[in-house]
Length: 168
View: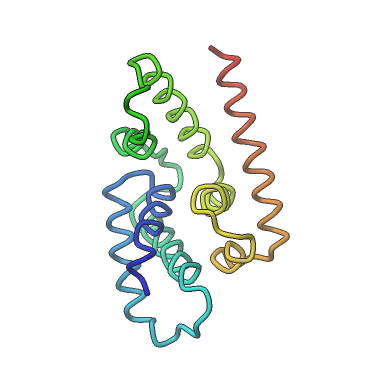
């Protein structure tokens, strides 16, 4: 039940914590929580249930290990691996690879700069592909709040990307 969702769990944890190593710790903690709470799973959407537990584990980990005022440092190698396009290595030139890395870094920075509720909603919807209802369950908020957060997150990230382009 959990194994099919481990990649998604890791991706969500990485986006919320900002680093690969921290995400590994969070996913390990989440797996223990899933194991302990499996008896309480009432059926339904296992992916949403697992990602809800990952979300809670990530926020618990962040409270224990990071000051609220601390600015996260990015794991640049992880960003490069996530945004690499292994499907089209023949058409890649050094210039296109450099542009793609710069675009990925700007997008990563724009998402990372979002407030936590907006960031998690954007990641769960646009990166993990969860539906509004699944996000509402995972985030423990009404669907209307999910839609509002998603619109605001997209608007803020887009504005950040546009101001980044204008600044160059």
